[in-house]
Image (cartoon, rainbow, N blue to C red; front, side):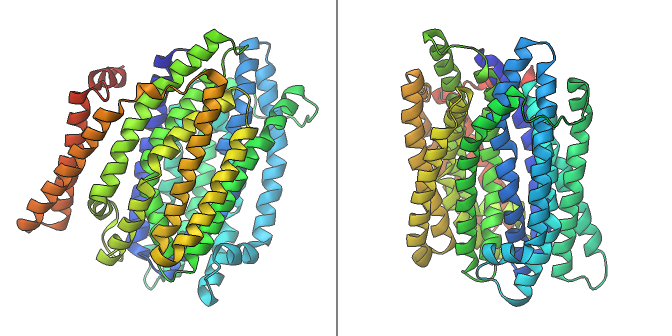
Length: 513
């Protein structure tokens, strides 16, 4: 189980995610420019949350946890069983996705009321209309998650994670065209974004079907629920669904709580979450997605495989945790500058920047825990255990909800996010104990915590110094933000290299290859 293979795979996944997330940030900037933190922006954010619930339940995370380990093992056995299993899995998945999408369209007013508990009148009606457009996207993206599982199992790692670029581009094109029409309202712009998202989801699937067909030989689904491999994968699905389900319930509760805080609160959380998800996707999702097929190889859990798992997990944590800590420091120390460069302009003004920065600072505290938890949970999935990570996710949601309710009144939207932060660290602690018991350790010793803290201090100090002189010099707000970020980020990178936190030359050599 070579760590170098996982590292190269992580880089390929990260490259695809970088492309999709950067274009996603452009999409959010365009939406923010036209909608700001208005009621229409809140309605759009709420509608996307509703669609994301079923997408995440039936999509990438849950499917990969049950599908990839079985598919990888069948591929190693040869004989065409892997292709037959993949098409049978598709045959089982498509009817469920279609039924859920249809029910979502029919129940749009009810779903809008649940996710927008503080919405009334035109705002609530707009949310329901947006849900009707967006919910069919769920079924389409479930098919995309199946294609992603096939491609990643074959180490085709760039395309499936870069394909969401098309999803974002379609929304950008839709809103730009709509904005060019004279007299268009914010509500009309929000509807244009929703239709663009649905079209983009179709494009995202279509671009992956060609490579998948070449790997499987056919895209025709098999409707065979008696297939032993399908039954095996299905037996692992409830655990991953439970874990995803409670997380989506938590997101729904958080959305409902934030929706009671007035105009712009939910939009601010959504904008901050988009920024937060860029490093989270790169560090947690990218590394975990690349590692799952490699971790799934092997048979009996003997001492040799335990040692190999510890080495692979430790190498991944050694890459993920330092970069997550750096991103956390950047969000806390230079959050205003990050939000300014990424979103400020048009309807997104200084007040909007301030509101999003406060929420982003809260999200920052969860980044190391969530990134590390992805790797630990992936190790459990590779070992065939999806039930205990699901139970730990349930504990996380209980802690998160209790803390969010306690902090909602005094802190508002940042308080809701801080509740999620507390839950994230509880889940990490539980997963660390579980993985240690399974394989004899977590590999956390590969993380140089002392030098890492010093590098983070350098980052924060240089950011503060740069901001002080930029204010004294009365620089343009965008020039000032770019200067602060350049010095803070450059200082962190230099300190990491000098203190041995990461082997900069080794990273560059891997990227060169």
